[in-house]
Amino acid sequence: MELIDNLTLGFVTAGHPWNLLFCLIGVILGTLIGVLPGIGATATIAMLLPLTFQLEPVSSLIMLAGIYYGAQYGGSTTAILINMPGESSSAVTAIDGYQMARKGRAGAALAIAAIGSFFAGTVSTILVAVFAPPLTAVALQFGSAEYFSLMIVGLVSSIALAHGSVIKALGMVVLGLLLGLVGTDIYTGTPRFNLGILELSDGLNFVALAVGVFGIAEILRNLENEHERDVMIKKVTNLWPTREDWRAMTAPILRGTAIGSALGILPGGGAILASFASYTVEKRISKTPEEFGKGAIAGVAGPESANNAGAQTSFIPMLTLGIPANPVMALMIGAMIIQGIVPGPNVATEQPALFWGIIASMWIGNLMLILLNLPLIGLWVKLLTIPYYMLFPAIIAFCSIGVYSVNSNVFDLYAVAFFGLLGYGLSKLRCEPAPLLLGFVLGPLLEEHLRRAMIMSRGDPTTFVTRPLSLGLLLLAAAVLVVVLLPSIRKKRDEVFVED
Image 1 (spheres, rainbow, N blue to C red):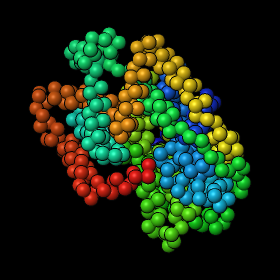
Image 2: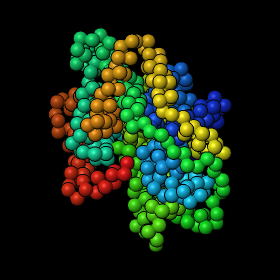
Image 3: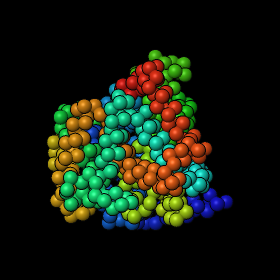
Image 4: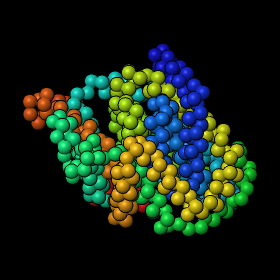
């Protein structure tokens, strides 16, 4: 009964005309940036963070959430039509989706992707609503030692699930933690690591770092790899799947939803991992594995369901624990902090309308997406013909105006340029920036809980291992790190990300 009352509150909040408008804006923007290859949800949300100052907290978070799962929908369009995934999690969809398009079945492939995504989004929204309250109740029992250990688990998991070298991912986390220390000591008020620069007294600007590392660096990478896009499909017809299509896609959608819902909760990019895992499962259990890579319906339905389910269940640790499961969730936490909201389990009890409004908006947003995406496919196809060199000046101008508007500080523009070059340099070294952002967001919280736990235990470090829950979380983190370093696991891990 309490769940029904909470969901009613959520739908009343999300159904407010103003919130509906921003949900619509979010899903349309998400679809747009998902369709245009090379921009990405992370970069777009980073660019839009300055706008959240001008909005109500619930409206801004609903819009940002809509951008995230809307991008999962939009990414499949380019994957199917031009074999160029708009989102990393849609890379697997391109394998069979593009082959279906080449056979004249682009409409069916797009419809299968949309239906699978809507079903997965609905199920994962229900899971968020069911599991978030009990997790919040558990989290309210956490002390500083447990929170410290939980954040260690999150950072180690982000290392384990990051692309490329584990050592490089560990280096990115450490760099993010170090950048998070810049500013003023949280207990003594002493300036530290600010190089004598007054503007760094309050620490590095989160928005400047996010826009630089993800927005500007992404633009530089895309300019380097700019090429003509061959839009093969000029007109998409026969959108509704046939009876045979329904039989072939039902089971993969169910399996993909289950896989994505489970893996989406894991820190480090669950939606991407979920789509690859779903494709692997479908190919292994198929009676006709030779059809995969040649237009198999299961190769579209499973991964698309998995990535959308993974995208939405990643909200569970963010809403209940204040722990980001991926870079987008880290940006969402940044948006909450900008609005003066302390992320964590207290959000559900202190601001229930915000908490349940975001959850309810997910289902509303998914419904909007399936009603909008298929009729607007012709528009998305036309947008694919826009050269990237015409887009990037407007994107950079938008980034600069947005970052400057946060503090009206020119120093932030220099910071964006610096972090943009840093992000580009890291990409050339094949260092993924996602662990860096997670380290930067969690660093101050990690330090706060570490020092608070030490103060409460009067300087006794054994407090982290004498408390059962804290010890269990630290053992889990150690186990994850040991397992991922095993040669056989490392080889499998490299195989999972080889196509990304």
